[in-house]
Image (tube, rainbow over all chains, first blue to last red; front, side):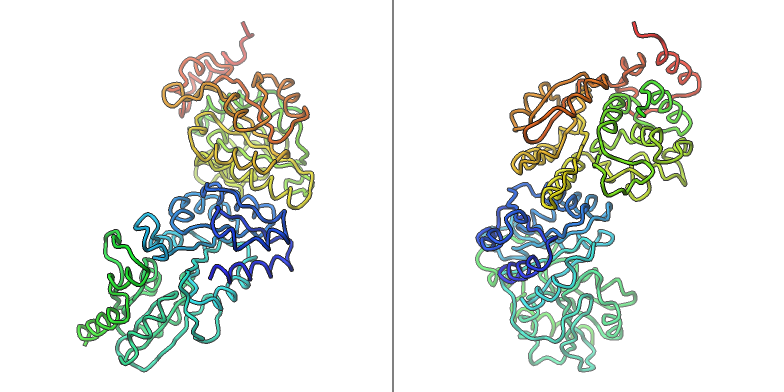
Length: 291
Length: 260
């Protein structure tokens, strides 16, 4: 997804002189061409995430369209107050683009994992929160949202899927299967590919969200009369879905604990039951409990 | 027109009394700095959004009352309603909201934010190729926050010679984390730094207009509660306090007493 981010921002910058890139000394190698093409609009500003956000807000205040980028936990959790006040409360827009979440840095442990970013940023009034699942979604959503004056969060992954799930429009969930089943599985981001595999031969409805704020309430409400299992490798999606009142929901993903294992993203997901087999077992169990 | 600092202080005292709110000593330490900054800035009180304006960010947002009083005296708005400072229905909160108060560029309050925003604004003006200048005023207590120093490092690294940092050295942190040598520290961080009497408008004006290489830092030596003996001698007691009627009369008397 970082390559797609580079390509999309490069294309936007060629057309729009207000596009600026600010890096926290991450993904720098991806932006050599951008730096060559737009030297005054490329700033590798160092490892000072709160200031990266304040500077982003200040640039937005003066009419630019900044993209600020580094690793997810540092640019969101460490900087929550800068995002809340400098961007949110001040109504200064800008694009926060992260890498690493949830477990792209699986081998580094809990300091580099990010599963609180989505719920934290969803709390901020006026904030848009996007978890693309594919590079195509990155491209479409970045182009449609980057200059709208709002603070927008793009949570990128190094493990996108490459499925064509239908037309991508900001704020609209994708209904992948509507079988009239009593159980609906809802997910978000790249994990949808794993969810599809795990549910391949199960009779369930299936919905994925790339936009967590604003959540697509109409689509969620359409499945109000089913039991909804939220399958997600982070927090935030179940809270978003429950903005729609009167639902019967449960969650399969993280426990109330730090994720302590190492290995690859697949190892960590498997340990959490977020591999195809684990998801299949969780959905099957949920369907039995609900029947 | 440059407002009269003593008259501004008297107005701050009266509003602190009427409203029941106010960080009076920290306001008193920056009155002359505000007069000097607005004296050198390009701005138009009749057109707060005028595109040709320079920008000022009050990073130490606790001194909002001083900023409100100065903006009112300059003609940004009718100063009368500032008396409702911090009360229900006012637009003048104890920390400023830029969406409510004309002339306020950034909503501040939590310390260590405004300087980073000002740095972003100054960098944006460089990218846009304008000659706009950006000024920000930080406190010494605020400078306990690491983000102040992050922003200084970034501003210096980006060569922002359109950014001026005013540092209010009122020694508010005498009982906690002190910064005994701010001018040395700012110079060591790469700012073109000058120290000045922060209650001397002419000296401040000179410091703000002299040629500078890179980020300009003006370390203003100030007195918390400047002008009222009671506040100067009891700055911790008065950090956040509203004077009652009797105390107000006493403070006004101290303020107007001839300097010894």
